[in-house]
Length: 225
Length: 70
Image 1: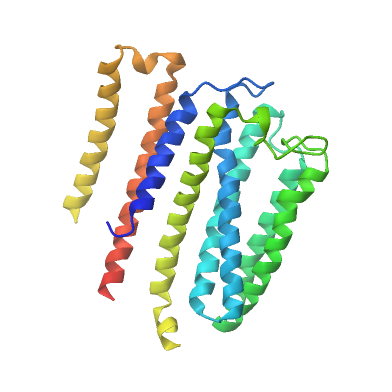
Image 2: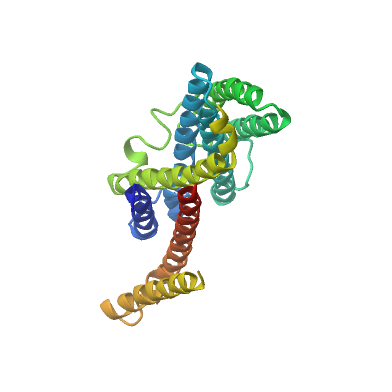
């Protein structure tokens, strides 16, 4: 059990999330009814994505400061899991939207924003595979990743708040999306934040598995330095 | 190796079984059917979640073994 406690914590938090998330009494808001419980499953996808992609950004910057291939591997793995969480968030959002807004895709600013952001990150993976030279690939990917992050953030955090949106927190609404005041009652808060931590830890675990795999795959390159 | 896999299956079934019986005896016989059968959904979700975690742990251990060999 070396350094495994946080993996078990992830499991415990997620079991708690599923149990409490399905069983607690939730406020009935508008036509959301029971679907407000998606707060514990759909929203943490985006929280964990932001955390993972920010971590990837840090490693990309680290690579540019000190060209160690390990940093490139970390950045790639964190970005990949971030993309996975984004796809899951988009799909779960579409399912929720079908029953809350009437259709899976209503060109909501947040939907368009994350779709563009995901395409930018898909391009990151394509770009990586297009460069055979390892050092050049690492450097170009790091630069592109920094560029991608600073487009991604405004697309999902800033632009959706400046226009009218079906999501909470659009133009004309006070405060943060769904996290302020009466939107998230105290009962939901004590499930929501553990859910965010649990999902993020799970995503991090998957990322570390990928990292360890890549480190074994590239061990000849890493030792050659 | 097959022993380990068999143990995992045994453990999983025991877990699911204990959850189901514990709930049945604790409250009343219709526990799983109460509240619009929401507990059935919960059991399904928890089974998937626990299954995924067991799977991740096996991958984790496999990678750990390869790492130790190097």
